Length: 474
Image (cartoon, rainbow, N blue to C red; front, top):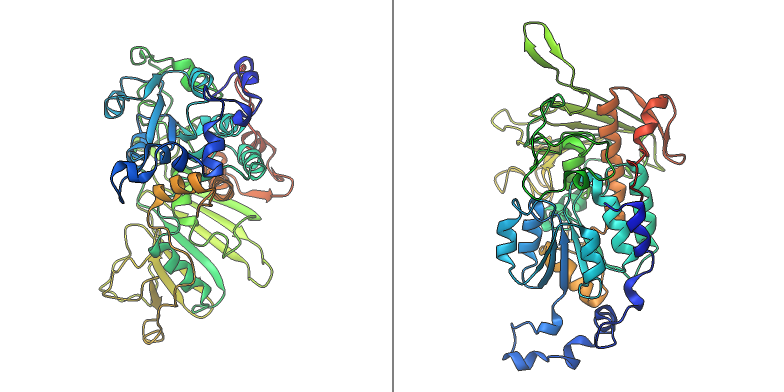
């Protein structure tokens, strides 16, 4: 969300800036000096108390929606600055953190607060993530970012490169189930080879949780008082304000969001993305429901995703792995139930079905066993059940992360790593955005990952690296 004119002021990292005390907050935290030098723990009365010097100074952009949940989960730290274009929507968040300074324009917040915060939380709509991410990296700030990490594939590649080039920064994607015991159980069960090489993966999600199959509003409305709508539009094509976009309804609109597959795919991919080597599909295609307004009266909705969607990514053989078809279903759609599944059992509302050469596996959407302890093991239900009756859940070999936000804040203080850093989030985001691209273009897309282009449909490439609106740049 930066204009060309303003972005030049943020070219230099903040690591060299000094506070009034002559030392940057970042240098103290990185050197591990903040605790003993400022306020030792024992001053506060013993174990369980967090010294002020232990606390991260947090700034956040986009706090009226998902951002309020992120902030609440980091409330043990020090929230110093909050930015949102709609202060009406974020009013309750401001009241929750009365000591935080308030801003409409993130650029002004960065200019005034750069020396006062250590980490940035990004919770704006998809189309502004990349600009905020790049600005935060230039400011030398640790980052927590909502997924999908970016709105376009080109942005994902650029952000990933920038993050990998700033290894001293600690980042995390908002994939709350990543690294949890249920997720790790699925990964470990899959890695055990119980069902053999995987040839099909079916993913179904009970979202969308917002209106879809919409046409662009023709009636103009007034934005909330004090809101700069032009700045909310940011780098996207301009649209007059309408409540069909804001508040909270922007996700199905391709200009601002990434549809359900972009919104929700990262919440499942983390459990098996690298294990199945899902980085570069050869072909992606889709189909969607059609809106009707009367008998045989079809309505075209090219700017907005449909209510129900199916996407397929076709992967070629990868090393010793056979070709793999990954199928996505949303809007109530599900795969055909496996013939081996007990008729008394229903497929969960959201879930996973791995089809291997030696068996099948039904798991929870974000990990675990959707049937609980009544059937199967921790990582899922293996089919046919008779064949796997005596199969035991593999021993735990992977680290667990059951405190999603605390893992990030602690890593920021110690220089540690997170289970779902933004570079990994970018990889998953790219796959999700290819699915969104197939839905948007309604074409079978041949994908050249190395060249970052669709080879059989020229028009699709304009969405791979879309031109920003005049006055905005990455």
